[in-house]
Amino acid sequence: MALIEETEAGEADDRKVGWAERVPVQYWVVIILLLIMPAFASDFTLFQIFGWSFILGMIALSLMFLAGYGGMVSLVQMTIAGLAGYMIAIFGDSAITDISQGWPWYVSIPIALIIAMLFGSLVGWLSVRTEGIYTIMITLAIASAFFYFARQNYVVFNGFSGFNGVLPPMLFGVDWRGSQAFYYLTLFWACLSYLVVLYLSRSPFGLALQGVRDNPRRMAALGFNVNAHRVAAYAFAALIAGIGGILLTWQSAQISPGTAGVGPVIDILIIAVIGGLRHPIGPFIGAFIYVVLKTFSVDFLTALGLGGERFQLLIGISFLVIVFWSPDGILGLWEKWRRSRGKDPLRDAGESKL
Amino acid sequence: MNAPTTVSERLNATGTANALELRGVSKLFGALAALSDINITVRPGERRAVLGSNGAGKTTLFNCITGDFLPTSGSIRFFGEDISEFPAHERIRRGLRRTYQISLLFTGLSVLDNVYLACCGVSRGRFSLIRPRRNDALMASAEDLVRVVHMEDAKDTLVSELSYGQQRQLEIAMALSGAPRFILFDEPAAGLSPTERRELVEILTGLPSHMGFIIIEHDMDVALRVAESVTMMHNGRIFKEGKPAEIEEDPEVQALYLGGGDG
Ligand SMILES: Nc1ncnc2c1ncn2[C@@H]1O[C@H](COP(=O)(O)OP(=O)(O)O)[C@@H](O)[C@H]1O
Ligand SMILES: [Mg+2]
Image (cartoon, rainbow over all chains, first blue to last red; front, side):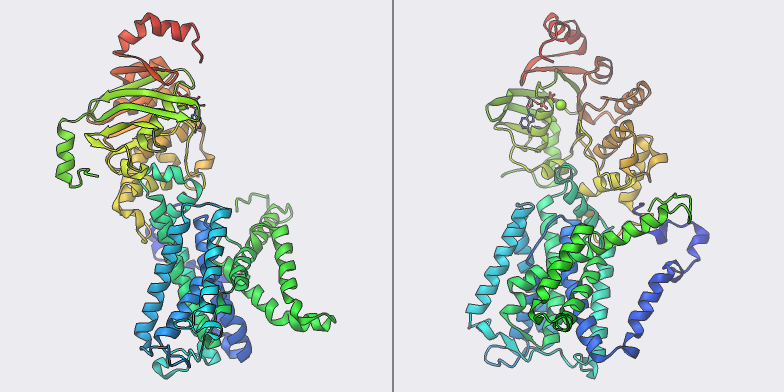
C-alpha cells in the first residue's frame, strides 16, 4: 500500500486516463443509483429512510473515525450532534421565541459547529489519558450528564420539551425539508464527510492517528505529541457529528433531550459496529440497516402477533448475530465472502491476496 | 521552565555544552533498582558503546534518556538544556533519536510509509491534512533514508513481510529522520547475519561526524569498531569507563565477561 496517491503514482501514459475511468464500475452504479433515486422512490423513502440513514451514518462515521483510526471508542458523538442541534435552535429560529435568538443561518450554523468542536475537544482532552473501557465509561458519563442537564435546564435548553419549529433556511428559494431537497442535502453532506474521512486516512494526520492507535509509545519517540493528536481527532470528529446533528434537528424540526439520550447514544455505537469500524463506508451501511429495522420492524412484529414496541429486541438480536458472525461487522462479512470466493479452485488458482 | 526556545538560544546552548549529561539518574521498578546513580557525560559527536550483561539496565537507561519513562531521580541535560521533565516527543524534536531493541514498527504500513511517518514526526507537517505527493519534500527525504539503509528494493513492501534483519535496518532509517543530533541504538546488530553486520558497521561509521551516538552492543567486534569510548554497566551501575583497548584488557571486565557474571 503506497502512500502516494494512486493518481500520482502512475507513469506518463497512465496519467492520460481520466480519474473517472479509474473508479470501478460498481461504484458508478451506486453513485448513479443514489443520484436518480428521487425519480422512483417515494417521499417517505427519500426523507425518512435515506435522509435519516445518511444523517445517522454521518454521526456514526465520526465514531468510526475515532474508534477505527484512533482506537478511541467515544460515546459522546450523539451528544455532540445533539449539542449542535440545540445551538442552531438557540442561536437561530425556533417556536420557542423567548429563548431563540433568531440570528441568520450563516451566523448560527458556524457558531453551532464551533461550539460542537470545542465541546468535542474538551471531551477528548478529558478522555485521552484513559484507554479502552475507561474511555467508554467516561464518555458515557458525559453523555448522560448532558442529557440530564438539558432536561433540567429551562433557561437555555428549555428543559423536557426542548425546541420545536427548528427549520432549515429557505436558501435559494428551496424548501430544504421537502423530501427531494432534503434527500439531496443529506446525500451531499454524507458523501462529503465520507470522502473527507477517506482522504484524511492517508494524510500525515490520519496516518499518525493510526500510528497512535497501534503504538503510542513509538509515535512519541518519533516526535508526535500523542495526546494532542488524539484531541485533534476528537475535534474533527465533532465537526462531522455536529453537521449530522444540525441535519437531524432539521429533519424532525425539533430537538429535545431525548435526541441525545442514552438510548440514541448507544444506538450510534451499534450502528458503527454493525456496519464495521474498519472503513468509512461501514457506518452508512450500519445506519441503513438500523433505519430499515427501526422503520419496518413494528409492522413485522405486529404481523407476527408480537408487540410492536419490541423493535429494540430485533435490533439487539441483529447486533448479536452480526457481531457473532463477524466482529468486523457487515464489512467483515463482505471481505470474508470475497476471500472465500477468491479461494474457489473452480474460479481461479486461489492467488487471492485481497 | 527556562529552556532555550529560539534557534539562536539553542545553538548557543550547543556551543559549549556536552551532547548528553546524566547526573545521578536512578530508576526503580518497585523494589528493583534498574539504574542507580548513573553519571554519564558524552561530548558532541562522540561515539560511545555501552556493554553489559542482560538485565544490566542498558535499555532502561535509554528509556530514561528518551523519556519513554521518567527516571525516579536525577537530571538529564541534552546539549546543555535540562530535558529531565520533558515528554518524549519534546526530546525527539530537539534532535534526540533512538532505535528499539525489539522493533517497534508499523507492521500494516510499507517501509516507505514507516520512514515517512518518522519524517513527519520531526517536521511541522505532523498535522498536515494533505496527502503526500511525489514531489513532497518529506517524502523525498523518506526516500533518501530508505536508500541510506539500502532498502530501495523493499520500499513498498509491508513491514510485516520483512525479514528480521530488514526490520532492524528500517529501525535505523527511522532514527535518522529529520536532523538528528544524537542517536541511541539499542542492540542494532542483534540477530543480524555477518553480511548484515558489515553493512550496519558501514552505515554507522558513515554517519556525519557531528552525529554522536550511544550503541548498546554485545558483539565486541561491532562495538569496538564503531565506538571511541566504552561504558560497562552491571546491575544498574556504571562499572567501568574508558577507551576500547583499556576496557578489553581490564582484568575485572574480563572476569565479568569470561567468568560469567550474571548474564
Ligand atoms: N518496564 C519495566 N518494568 C519492570 N521492570 C523492568 C522494566 N523494564 C526493565 N525492567 C527490569 O529492569 C532491569 C534492567 O532491564 P533492561 O534495562 O532491559 O536491561 P538490559 O537492556 O541491560 O538487558 C531488568 O531486571 C528488568 O527486568
Ligand atoms: Mg536491553
